[in-house]
Image (tube, helix red, strand yellow):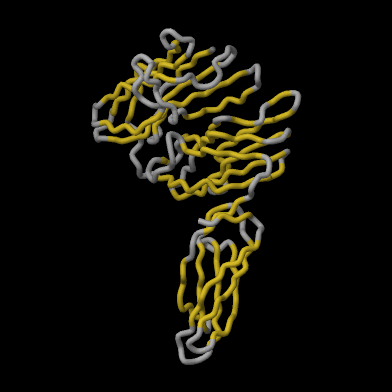
Length: 332
């Protein structure tokens, strides 16, 4: 799928054939988006039985995903509507970069997202390469879903995040919503990226998973000074039908000394250490439970975030049906 910069002019070329015995003047309309965000129109004469390569220059519209279509008309009547390859437009930020974007425990899956439910747009990396003040926003359907701000200077602050979640609540109306990341430098829009489309539904079954006996502890690998987190919880399906959810551990780290903003991060990409006692499950997994069925979840692995003192952690389980556990807090 081609990607183009917002505001650039690019040219689409289509080969059009006149199969009739007479010379004809056609009209071609190239559109981006449905309804069309931009159009390019051309009139052209094609001799009988001949073909012609027709160019349609188009200025790329605002950040997003655009289906492409070409309408060929004669005498005001549409003869054919030909779909083209979708186009993604973006505004590349020269200073702020990101990678590893996911939603909750993994990539979006139709039916996983309920109207009005809380979720997090997670970035494995989000940072600036120069000193300044920055903000990142995630928008759904043009409305801000979540945001984070930070400052970076010689006297303090930080360049960005190795893992940050932008938390928010999904729209209360079902539909498909384009997710857009916008980045700002000194309050000025400097970047924009299409992240994908979320299907937000109001007909999916909410989570019936319950979370009990939730414990968070910190230990040390035997014979070493390597610390680990030991997180365990009993997950039970309290509903009347079998249900499948993606379940993941979420961690919120906050430090007043360094001025780190409070934000939830998903650790679904972490695996349990084989030398941890009792660890068997990763930080996130897909779990299917029959009515009344239960699963003892136990993650034992690298500690999340800094191991030095002065940090406060909150830990909880979340699932993609909107369910979550109580929070367990701990300080280091």
